[in-house]
Image (tube, rainbow over all chains, first blue to last red; front, side):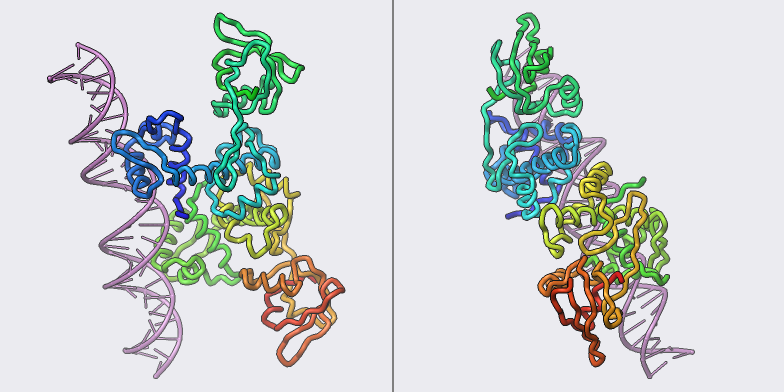
Length: 220
Length: 220
DNA sequence: ATTTGAATTTAGCCTTGTCTAAATATTAAT
DNA sequence: ATTAATATTTAGACAAGGCTAAATTCAAAT
């Protein structure tokens, strides 16, 4: 089991996250933007990661993550999400506060630590944003989900994740009373602009624009 | 509040820990041995830390930590010891397993994290080795303590710390049934070799050599 | 089929933190 | 008071990981 530096781990994680179902390969520019580094720095690192076998790197054509790379990415993501659960459930962080801290904690090297943490948290399957936590072997429990704006009128379900997990967006959701786990029902769809009205937990109604709804994922 | 790199934090912590009550200054060689780095590397870093004002550095005469350096050291030590409490009390680590992991966790930058962790742990004043945890302002609660071999015959007290916290020593203590917090009474002192016999928690007697006893600290 | 603009890579430089080998200062022993 | 041994520092090299500026390649539009 190879060891990677902080920087390398961050690249691996980012590449994995930017990998789309389509097989286009992740571009240097996208990585550069996501990590806030200059494209030149990214190019150089991609070459190195290519040599180490975690990605397939063809100059000028973006990168594809290898099976080995995927394994590493999932192990990092597992750590990140377990720490996020810890921060929210045990230390009472709000879900928009956790990212920075979890991004540091995820680099701590100790498999026993992660196993114990997992156990301590009761083997959670999803993090506070609703994203699945891979198990030790990198397997994730997927749940089928669709954007809220695609739920049909009078359709109902549960908020299980968000696409945009920026602090601003998360704070907005918190303010209007939407949260992971909330039961919702679509009670109005405005054809004109795509905005909708939903009923949350049979108690409260919320109006939201199509944009916002598109960033909320529902398990039906 | 200055920010320091991992490497710098490790130096600051080590220098603080090696600082003796006497005013000799900590030597390059001692630091080199403690951190397992070459003396040349240490020299170089001492110069830099001197320029940053956390230590007083006079070439060839060892270093003294400054007030500012001490503040930083205590904040690092606070983090380290709080994480050690977490690992032992919440994740069921044994006290000889915690050091490596805590040494990584102590570098995570987030004051809110540490404040919340402190609260979550119930504001502990001592870590699992019995060492005091500095508060946010760097104040430590000291407790007077003497080596077990200096406790008089029939004297009693409580094990509050160990001097040698090597994994081997800690495992040995665990095996014979001595632990932080144990109530002990000295029931025999052998003049010949300084070895002693103690009664632990009014239940069990343990023989130990002068060397071992000298590494166990008692609050009388 | 060229040209042009955007994306990407290369080349060269910088800082951090380590190392080895060589030089120098201090300390201990005669 | 010298000398020998030890401790420390300096000098120079190297790897990691970032940057800027310049060169190159790809792709889109004429």
